[in-house]
Image (cartoon, rainbow, N blue to C red; front, side):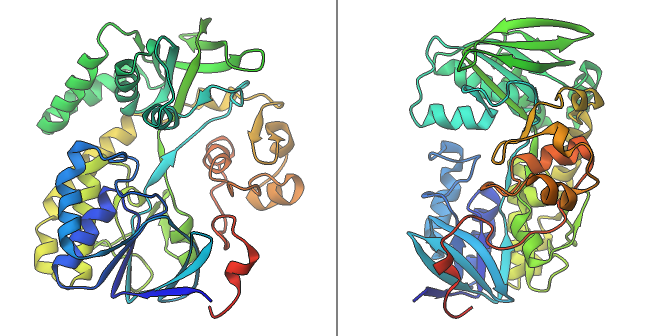
Length: 413
């Protein structure tokens, strides 16, 4: 028999956006539940009890909201109900209003050798080190794209890693243009300067990207390209990620309209589905400021306090302006589409190489002919890569969103 919880408002995702939404809604006197698949709140940004998140953790504790950790939402069988898997049992979450704040994940692009051990995502390596992976004395290259590359390099260096190189694929002229535009965002300008100073002395190369990784059983060297020149760098770890993409699976399952890769919302953060709102990186990739502004706005709106919600319009507008600048500065270059060879594995779950999907016309055809995207990750890794390489956005999402036992579907829905 499934356990059941009933709330006026359910928030899915306990990162900054979800925490802000819960605090706002609960402070309006609503009965609120916060659901997340991690054991602790904080998401990717405030994970492991980051000190900058402590004021929000304290506000969450005082809010009176019920926090349900370790619960992974896998189905939305009908309006007003979610099914989650928790501790091997099904948990039915009933709600009147729903706020989705499921965040984002790293985008990986395939290249020869990217499946070798010790080739990891930037956030993935950072999380492993925070969990105890020793990197002292290890040679690390941080590569890909986005403002988090220097931050990850700085963190790894603080744990004793030797950062050989930071390779940013974006053109230097775009990065300079972004830096000049940050005069309109003093806080961001200071943060960017601090990050750049933190890796002073480390090679930082724009217009540079990884084209291959080599090693006998595990990573030993990588090949990079810059201005038409290629060379090899020895390294023990490669941390590589090409920005972030939103976790759209649950919004798509519920039926929320998506435009240009993000959930479409109105000025109150409401989606196309009645009673459902979105906050944070589901709407735009813009960091903590955007997450908090949209989370508070969605929470106050769900709490029937549009007067309080309206006060966050300006903060959201500023944060969206910054997000737009980031999107332009770190847009992926066309040359990255030529890195993978026909033999390069694209779908790691099903071992599907690029050559097998090259003759297909869309995701449906690729799935039917090659099983690409049909493995345990349900296209969470290969999906954004194939979208970039082939221009195939996700066509449909079906339950379960994560692998669960068949028994989770039994009983009342």
